[in-house]
Image (cartoon, rainbow, N blue to C red; front, side, top):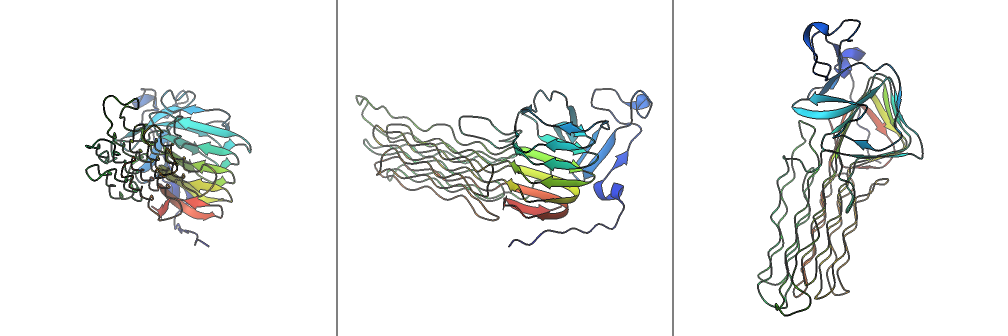
Amino acid sequence: MRAAIAILFLAGCDALLGIHHLDNLSDGSGASGSDAGTADAPAPVCLGSGAFTVCVTPPSAPLTLTGPVDTTACSGGQVAAVGSVMTCVLAGTAITIDGGVTIAASGSRPLVLVSTGDIDIAGTLDAGSHAGGQTGPAANGAECVPSSPGTAAADIDNGGGAGAGGSFATAGGAGGAGEASASGAGAQNAQSAPQSLAGGCPGSLGAAGAEPSSDACQPHGSDPAGAGGGVVALVATGTIRVDGAISVSGAGGGGGILARGGGAGGGTGGLIVAVATTITGAGAIVASGGGGGGGADHCGNGLVGGDGSTLAATGGLGGLGGTTDCPNGGDGASGGSASGAPGSAGGSKGGSAGGGGLGYILVHGSETVTGPLSGVVQPF
């Protein structure tokens, strides 16, 4: 049983959560200065902790999320800075996601939920990435160090090298080689815990196999690499309760494309930041990696890797090879410290790709979550 992280606070509620009432800040609409603090323009309130503090117009009503969130448009929200990062903030005197409801979040900005009371997630907040579907909010950020792609095959009738899984809180798996001259991509090292709202990192691409130009199955590389998971920050002055699920898991990497192409790496889990007096619940909080894509045969594509789980502490399964003698991709990372599994060499077939590494779960408060966690959990 994982030991709960408990952080004891020796100050009042305002100091604990970094709450300040400011008389001279912009409300996010461009107005600032002398209007702030008047009856027409209430003074912004700043909540959070350290580098993860946000200043917003105080909410006046509770908020229940019912549909998809696009952080680029940020409809119904406030665009506000957290450090140097512009985010989409949805604020309420309480925030709720009802049981049975799934909120899909995507867009260019991190998603920040701010409550001057509690946050209660009985449903699912899905800010992860999915192969062929949504990319989580602010995923694949500039802080990611991309792995090189696999190396293309030089000799006829041989496979291309595969891509590596992305690396973030833990390392992704290396890509499998094709023939001797077609190496798989090596994985990047894990990154230290971010000091800003940074998203998960993508895998890298596989490379083409080699076939005669007259062959009906012309050489190609791989489908797209898996995207990293997105970014969600939850800030409450009371309790954050998760009895449903929060996911920032990474997407599975694309399979190798005929003929004999190497698979593409899975994406890493993203970032969850939680700031509250108490963070509790029996639900899942997951930042797992996506599985690597399978290698291709002469005329058979490898299959895409699985996405990291939304509801359980499991990583994405590696994609199957194009035929039974093609290598399967490496699984994405899950749990609290694992790296993504490496891909396998394909020889005359395309190599299979590595799975993505874990993301981060950063907490500021007394954490007593009893449900499954997948990601590197750190207090701040």
